Length: 364
Ligand code: LMG
Ligand code: PMR
Image (cartoon, rainbow, N blue to C red; front, top):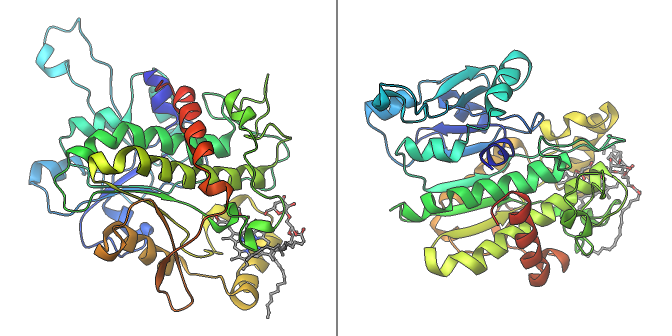
């Protein structure tokens, strides 16, 4: 279970100081410690814990991996046979720079595969409070002909974009509960492309979770389909499906946990970030034409910087503290509570998705 949990976590976790929250994630990670784990080889590395106060020197030393490159931390097993029990009876940390690929990644992977590394535990042991969790990492594999899989055998898009977030959010919910911060939030990034009540959501292939039969079977592509609805693999659809899962999960969290915890659960579509590493797998022609298409034709284009400011608003703006909502922005950059598609607001589907997901990630 430990391994299962650890290895479907997103590829990195960055922690950085206040004052950077309006900066782009690139800048923010300058002060960050990132945790890379094996199964999201291509994931964007955007789990960020924005800290509201300066920390003590000793805490800051934890952040000593203030290194721009991708960095991994892992934790050794408890060695019960060791005589110096005090020194070894806790999980330690290792920082590996350059861990988004190559040797660094392979090392982080080897450590994680020992089954003893689990970021959530590690974070808890650091004693740092968690006030806001942003689940933003995502992969998009529009040109893949065949599915690829996480270490646990889940189709990679849904494994990364939904199951990884679901597990991380569930594991860190207790930490959020304990926080004494004035406005605790859990944010899961959604997308217009998962919402079939929009033009963008009607561009084929359309999101559709069906009766979740593929998910129920474990999305492993062996004895079951790699797609949630049980259909043939389609990378673009898998991404859109995963975004429907994100939006459903946010609402299910709201229904199950908001009243008791006071945590704000929210999702958003920050606009079409047409120039982003999310499209690294797309064909070059798409990457060339998509930005002008969005800028001059659909007018849905936003820069990474503007999108970052929007997400930062959802993290900290007191006027965006309502729970259970999906935020969007109009052409004047004013936020509003947007309407989700029928499927993305289906309460029964949300419940089933929650229950199946917790089984798959080993929480039930
Ligand atoms: C699929 O193709 C791929 O097959 C798949 O592998 C994956 O990549 C997937 O979504 C990703 O896409 C999608 C295909 C669908 O799109 C294309 O092939 C077109 C690519 C377009 C890329 C953008 C570049 C556009 C270039 C235009 C030129 C730009 C020049 C800029 C210069 C500016 C200078 C001024 O495409 C189609 O199937 C075609 C038709 C799709 C239309 C979809 C619209 C459906 C509308 C339905 C409306 C329903 C009503 C909805 C209700 C709304 C209510 C509000
Ligand atoms: Mg889309 C108002 C129209 C609109 C918006 C806001 C988006 C957003 N897109 C729109 C329309 C269209 N797109 C139309 C009419 C087409 C057919 C030409 C089209 C095509 C298209 C493709 C091929 N669009 C795409 C792709 C992708 O590969 C992107 C995708 O689906 O990624 C999953 C994409 C997107 N369009 C968007 C947004 C936001 C995306 C990126 C998805 C995301 O950021 O989550």
